[in-house]
Image 1 (tube, helix red, strand yellow):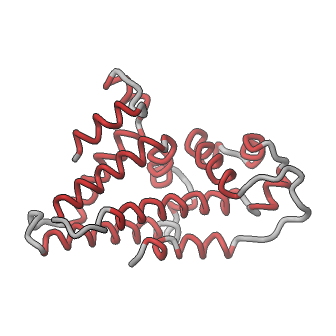
Image 2 (tube, rainbow, N blue to C red; image 1 turned 90 degrees about the vertical axis):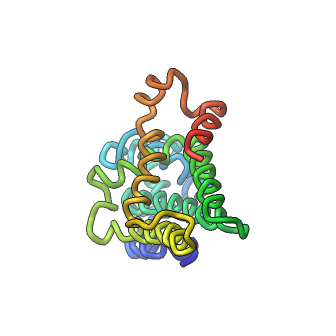
Length: 214
């Protein structure tokens, strides 16, 4: 499965909910800018806390103008998460582009993930919240995109086991251990930064973290 297909189910969910809002926005703004701003807003406020009025205010838009781009908060949230899942899927693919050993590919993937989460402070928090708080992704149907992505990543680990480079074990346990290594560190940034006595998103701190996990 390619990363381009990983978010099909979440795309379908958001598309079914899409309705064109009335009128045209008075303040032109790009779709990518809306998604980036919403990513930070949802991470800092949570899905419930980031009201439509708050989201519109962060963008300098009226609620009507925001609805022109995305008909509902749920639709906007699903699009934000779809974008993140695609970005992660692309990293998994990029780590495997060269015909290196699976151990080297895994180190490359760990390095890419550390860079990605270090460069995008909202992502780890948003990913963690999406599964432990009440969000559109915690419903039975909403979990499918995340499960698809996990299976995609797990396939890489299983291939490494089949090649004799990784110890034979339940790939799901190995996958969740790797995810926890990255996600918890960056998602709990205030505590982690205090423990490490630095801003964990600073370039030098990210470089140090990469050395620790690769």
